[in-house]
Image 1 (cartoon, rainbow, N blue to C red):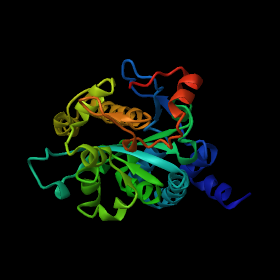
Image 2 (image 1 turned 45 degrees about the vertical axis):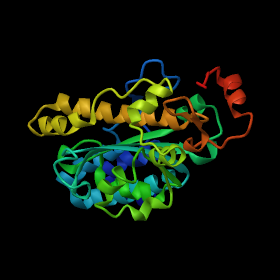
Image 3 (image 1 turned 180 degrees about the vertical axis):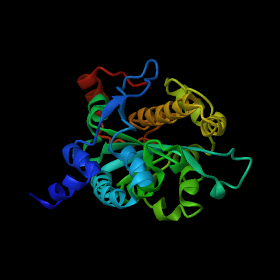
Image 4 (image 1 turned 30 degrees about the vertical axis):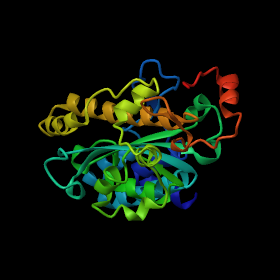
Amino acid sequence: MNVIERECVFNPCLFWLSRRLPLVKLVGMASKPKNSVFPSPFEDPDGALALLNEQWECDPTSAASVESILMDYLRDIAEISTVVLDIETTELISSVPISSMKTSVATVMLLEQHSLGLPAETLLQRSTQLQFWAHESGRGAPLRLLAHVLDHAKLIVAYNGLAFDLVVLSGGDESRWRYKVHDPFLILFKETGRRFKLASILSANGITPKSGSGADAPLLWRAGQLGDDTAWDALSSYNANDVLILTELVLRPSIRVPGGRLIPSASIRPLPLNFRFYCEKQTRVTFST
């Protein structure tokens, strides 16, 4: 009997994990945008990471053991991944300084770094999507573990992330991640001299726009705090769908801006000259030109 097995005799949570790891990747389905060529792999927020939140409430000593295992798991998958990120906040941007804002929920899509040249559908099927929640929600993975994922990620992708998402998550110290951030918003600005809202970029690339408005996220968060679980369900789906849409965008061989110009550098793809032909031949996916 090894160390973990011995501990599991006295720790039901560790026993559960010992039977799941590395099968922690419990796959359900997020809502799939219409006309999307991608499947929707979505991590079950009630799996191993969510269990950690419950353990902290009833047995902190046991939870500490579990957290150590899960930290190793998150480090291992992050170190081989490009992480696509989006967050929602508890306040509107007009209410408080960005660096003082709080995250309600954050979703990441972990894409295998060495597989970024594969057809999109194959890559998405091999991806891992995780959702992190503020502690008081009692949902999903504890938000405090998200920084651990970002610290170990090969690359972080976030639209306007250096001015918003990463500033909020770091409390104003986003420089810890700046060196490995791929921010399509900044890349498009440098290439064109124009600042584009994500909705306009999605429209220009024929991608179904976001399912709601970020301005609704604080309202949904507050409704959930008052006991409306359906509001938090809606917030979860909205945030997860945002990440799926952003992933679809950055996996295009190039990103089109309003007016028609294509910007290959905004994509995260390693681009051989015949990449578009290869993708269309392998997956029968037609990329917009």
